[in-house]
Image 1 (spheres, rainbow, N blue to C red):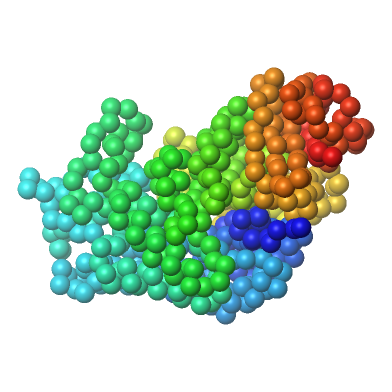
Image 2: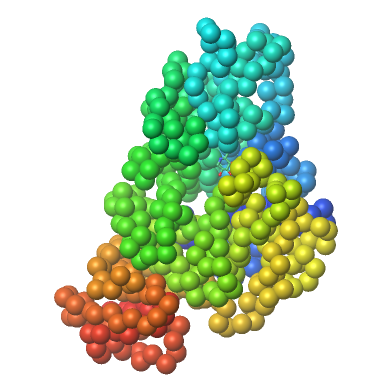
Length: 534
Ligand code: NOJ
């Protein structure tokens, strides 16, 4: 009997960075109607939900992650009625909508902060984190901002400092103020009432800071001053747990809603503490983002994250997002897609929800910018260290027409020059393309419960280049074997694996026999082989 399909557990989530997806107003920025226009493409790809990076009014110091109004849409992206239309259209195709909520900080252009700056008596003053200068004069404590420099910004007219973890134009909110908390909880309700299906919480474990603002202890090692501190007091305070329960309570009062959190400065173990019944449905782990091209590194990332998610918890995995160089660039500099295919096969056959990032399915590579072309605030500050995040945010490559069919106007970031050959339209026509590979594996994931819901058992291999595991659901077993080597390898089946009769479910190599009759299985370079027990 088929189990019931849960969109966020068994399905696939696709992240869209809206300003780079599809421009319908020809201002060089993508917009909501652009996303709506591409829903058929996404439905055909086989995804179940879209996570939209922030779409609220923003002065764009951090490209939407500095929100100036939580209850509206940035006019450059459209209107609330465009948003409602997008939700309706998506739902008609069984695609769910997840919004990015950036509730740790606002923009300094938010009305609340403008009021807060007016005087210490202003009702909004206490909505942010203010401290007097230290006894010796100067910063209230030793905290640094993640985006560089001290975390405290002095306001001479008030003779006070306000706190910011990111840019100084992103002041942190005071979640200990009950009015702030209530307003933020109303942000959830506002969008839930507009039929949104879930949220991605930006740096949620930062909402609370220690109420006395003590100095963080020093650490001997670290690249920047920020890294040479133990962040005991500016992140991960225990007060987050009751708050998450409240947030989850709100979500659970609606039907089938979901919340995934971005944990900041936390290892896998710490991140997993926030996940579970009554808390987050899911959190992000950086295991894949930090892996080198080695089967063993991916295997241990899977082992770690999976073992932190015993039932009823359910893991998720991502290879790409808007803050990380694209996997196609991390693992390959030329135009071949063999490695992308192998990673796609791994990502889509794991126990856990795959999060795809727009353009990953066509193997988009990072763009390279000249220092003066950089837009990202982190890139501007750390350009010399190649730290910027613009590379992975370039416009989606739809076809080979001007600006890759993204816009008729000059896009906000340059299109990758490879768009002439690397684009959706070309790949749709090529049966061997990466895009068609994604579609095939996604279809298999949908078809086989072992892939979308089964348990996972990693199988130690005789070859360092092989990553292999079993996915098991009731009496269905699928055996995934992935060759990380560009050369042929021989994989030896042993132990209990020899007792099963294996049939080929998927391979890129059509000449393969459909039955595996030998304990030694030959895999071509970068081959994905899926076997099914029978
Ligand atoms: C994490 C987001 O992913 C990143 O893009 C942003 O700059 C920071 N949070 C600040 O909101």
